[in-house]
Each structure stands twice: as structure tokens, then as C-alpha cells.
Image (spheres, rainbow, N blue to C red):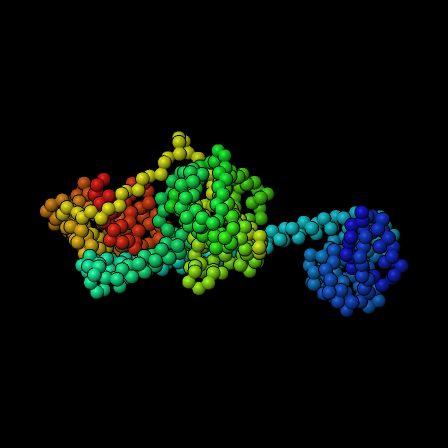
Length: 520
């Protein structure tokens, strides 16, 4: 079957045009053509139609091949241009080639025409393929830069915002300890603490998107992590929606904070739930994947290697093209006002990037959606360690232990001191590291715990701990911070065995963490 070819003929001699078309038909093409012989007609044809090929004579009345190739190259730069002419001087032919012609065929030797056309069409397809890849990579780069800028903004405000929330929650919880449930103001204070908690959750989601939340990655079996979440996910999406689970066989281990896996699954399943009707289906699956260079070439953020794939699919309403372009942007949502913060998928995106993975998805209106997350394989010698048991949370009061509290934010220093004193601890409150060192030297008895902010003007928390331990060798340390994880990591405070408390924290969180640290 002949291959259709849309060819634009720049030719003033109709007989020559027929010879060229006959040569193309003999070569297996079915040319759909238009013949032009003036500059105005050429411009109009290029503006009104998309062509596969241009075949042009050189000498025409009032018009020539030099002008023709300039016009074609300007209006459709990727369009193959072949000069098909009678005798043309070597200098003229060279000039036409220099200006963009791909080949020169003499009319007396039209047997060369079809091979030249075949070659140029193949090269044109390859150029278009490369250009699409380049455009896709550039679009991915632009999107990544936009996401990075938003992430930088989110991380920048988190410290101050978390400090303010710590103060708000702290004072409200202190007041709740003094006001009984049947007294005026108790309900209002509960409302303040609840609002502060919701605000803290928004901050955590922003930090997850920004890839700057404090995490403790560990090697784990993703199948086990999903299975541990299935009952909770079913309650989350409702009993009317079918939830299917297809674990991959012999799944490779990955390295990620288990809490982040929970966040990913919860956010994707809630989104899927909102997209399906009462008889909807949501599927979760895992698999080992080996991605080669050919797969990774069109994707700027993917490197070849071995990955574990986690997919969440649904048979819901799907997304149109405009929605698909924006789904990972924070605060973008298609839900009604008050029904979503627009941070769910942004959180997933940030978590995946923070763990050196990538995420892609497919969705069409009325055809549902599928999100595929790829986390790099992380093998280590020995068995996969079981997740660490979290310390039992307790609000048990202290027994008069001495705590050296160091915090350069005055309001946080004050509210944290009041909480600790209310819990039964002796508190030495220091607004600076140097003042903390003075207190440590002047303290006659033992200091049981150093509770210190991480990043401070004079010394960071780690440096301060080393100096205080020169005075109090048996000192236990608990660090707290509202700064983002990259800043904390820079100060070496996310390694194994470090006790860390993320701001903003509640009275209960503080009490439990202090108890756990003192019990070590």
C-alpha cells in the first residue's frame, strides 16, 4: 500500500511537476500535493497547511530557489527542503545548501529522488522525536524549578510559624490545666488547641512537599508497610468502596521513614475515594521494576536502575488536561471550599522526591487514575530490620529532675519552662548557649537533661551538648527545632540515637519525650 506524502512543489513548469510526482509514485508514495510558483503563493501554502516535504526548482520567473529556501526555513524550520532542478552552477547549488536545503537532485537524474526523500523523511521524524523529548525535558525542568521555588518558600516560613504555634499551644494547654471543664473559657481554650494542631498539620504537609520535614529513614519491606495500613485505609475510604491489594512477589527493600509511607497511602487513597462513586474500586499494588536508559531518556528526573513500584489506582472520574498539569501544586484543589487543603498530592510529591524516587500518573476524564511511585532499591547486608518501637507516650509528671532548657526565642523559653515546672521538673531556663554554660558551671547538683533548641546564634545544640557534657558527663540530651530537616541535618542531629522533638509540640508530646529520654 502506497504511503501518503504531503508534498509542496515549488515549480513553474507543470510538465516537470508531473515527472516528479510520477517518480514519487513509482517509489511507493501517494503524493498529495500543491504546486506554487510565486513567493506569495508559497507563504500562503506554508501558513495554511502542514507539509511533509518541499521539492523546489531553482530558476523561476521573478522567483528562485534561494528565496524559496529562506522562506521555508523561516516559516517551518524543520521542514525538509530538496532542490530539484536542471543545470545549476556549483556556486549556486552550494549557496542553496548553505541556506538550509537538505539535498540537490538534477531533473535529468530523478532516480536519486526517492532515496533522498526516504532519507530526509526518516531524519525529519528523528528530529521531531528529539525535539519532543527536549521540549518535554525542558517542561519538566521548568516544573521542577517552580516546585523547588515553592518548596524553598515553604521551608523558609516553617521555622517562625512553628515557633508561634508552639507558644499558642503551650499557653492554651497550661490554661487548660488550671480551668476545669465546667468553668467558663474551657471550651474556647480547647478550640484554640485544636486549631493550633490543625495548623501544625498544614505546616507538616508543606514541609513534606518542600522535602524538608524531619524524618528517620529505615530499610523496610514495602509489602508489610502496606499490609499494616490496609484496615485503616478501608475505614478511611468507607466500607462501600472496594479496596484490592496485590503485593509483588520477592519485593526488594526500600529505605524510607515508615510514617511517610503511611502519608503517601493515606493521601492517594483519600484522593481516589473522592473521585469514585459508591460502587467504586481502589487498587494498591507493588512490584519490582528495572528501568533502563531508553525508559529514562524522556524523563529529566529519572535515572536508570532498580526500583520498587507502589501504585494506587481507581475507577473514578479521572482528570482533564488542565487539572493534570497542576495536581502537584500546593493549595491547588478541584474540591469545594472547605473540603480539601490542596496539599495531599503536593505532600506525596515532596515525600517521593525527598527519598530520591519519582512519581508518574495516568488519568483521563471518566477513565479513573493511576499513580505510580518508584522508590530506589536499598539492599544492605543482613535481614531487613523491624521498625523501631516508638516510646510509649505518657504524661506522667517528673520527680524533681533538673532540666537545663536552652531556647533563644523568649516566648518559647517561657511557655516550655511553665509546662516543665507544671510537670514537676526543676528548670534552669537559659536564653543563650553561653548563659546555659554559666548555669551548668554554677549548678551544685546534677543536671539530668539538656533540652535545647538546635540552631542558635552562639552555638548550635550539638556543640552546646558537647561543652555541657564536659561539666556534666552523665547528661542526657533532647533536641528540639522548628527549622527544616536540611538545616537540622547540616548540624548532624538526625543520626541514630539522637532524641529529637519537632516544633510545634503539645504538652503531652513534650512530657512523653522528656520521660522517654530520662528513662534511657
